[in-house]
Length: 103
Image 1 (cartoon, one colour):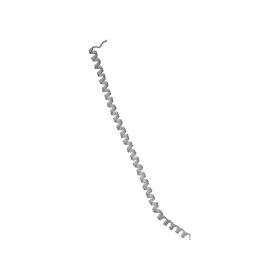
Image 2 (cartoon, one colour):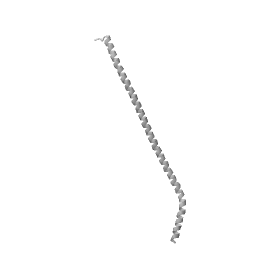
Image 3 (cartoon, helix red, strand yellow):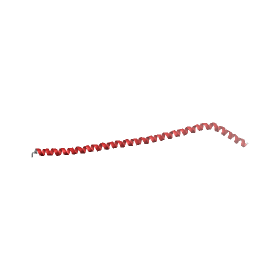
Image 4 (spheres, helix red, strand yellow):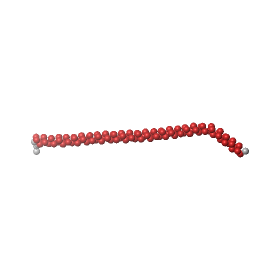
């Protein structure tokens, strides 16, 4: 059963219309995927930035605590070095006083 020219033209027109609609749907899908991907990239970047800020805060706090601890140790160490020079004198005099009190 041969197709006449008008039937062929109608079939071609319908196929073209269908493919045009399909192309438009694909174009919309690609745009939606592009937008979704851009949002995902932005979300991951924000998440990474947040994680970097948390790490920086954590490290800053650790560094501060270590420096504070080191400063306290240095302070305690310098006080210990000063006290022994004073302590024997005071302990010697207290020993002398105790010896004097016993006699």
